[in-house]
Image (spheres, rainbow, N blue to C red):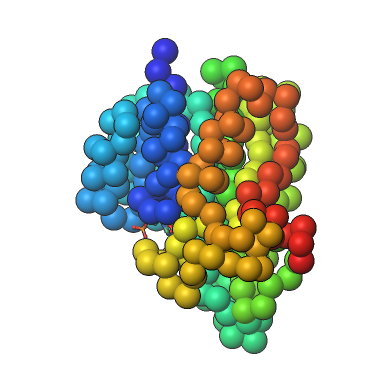
Length: 240
Ligand SMILES: NC(=O)c1ccc[n+]([C@@H]2O[C@H](COP(=O)([O-])OP(=O)(O)OC[C@H]3O[C@@H](n4cnc5c(N)ncnc54)[C@H](OP(=O)(O)O)[C@@H]3O)[C@@H](O)[C@H]2O)c1
């Protein structure tokens, strides 16, 4: 039986690497982004051809439509990777209500909605695996107000959902990324040299570094790992 994986925001950087590695591991991967053409192109170029769907994760009804598509086309889901994120890079003083709501809706509400809808498919089929992409940092960060608040929410969402869903053999875990590939919202390495003396291992990470951790957490080898927050950051957080 073919296993189905949904990767949120999978046309660039970390999400794209996750999709590529899961497809290489034999999954049928559903690529998602707001741009249908890009999603189609990525899905067609995976190691194993996947599907694609245009969705806006800031919009609850768009997420509903995505899950209707999944139920109609596959009627199963083995893996969900919540990966999408938005950041305006603002301080609390620059965070207006619209920024707060857009960031929280994109980065946290979507993880809740996708986790719930995915679980409703996974529960009757006997289980599944969910991985949330968060930050490795366990500290406050300057000028990242609504983004970091949303990631704090993702961490607690992971732990609470993990406890609620473990009895149904649905394992929920998180991978905390450090500086990896391009910054969130960018397609280039802006202000991000590869070599970085602040990071104990000496350089920023590659998208595949995070993706390999995700692939492990959804695999049977991780069958006893529930509610973990696995940092993939070259040692950055523990050194700060
Ligand atoms: N990059 C880092 O150094 C870093 C560090 C720590 C944590 N992280 C975390 O890693 C995850 C991935 O980050 P990334 O840097 O790989 O992100 P990214 O390069 O900005 O890629 C985001 C992906 O999501 C899609 N997307 C964005 N907003 C969307 C929306 N509203 N609806 C649907 N799709 C949307 C984008 O495609 P479209 O724009 O075409 O929709 C793209 O495919 C995030 O959760 C982030 O917080 C990243």
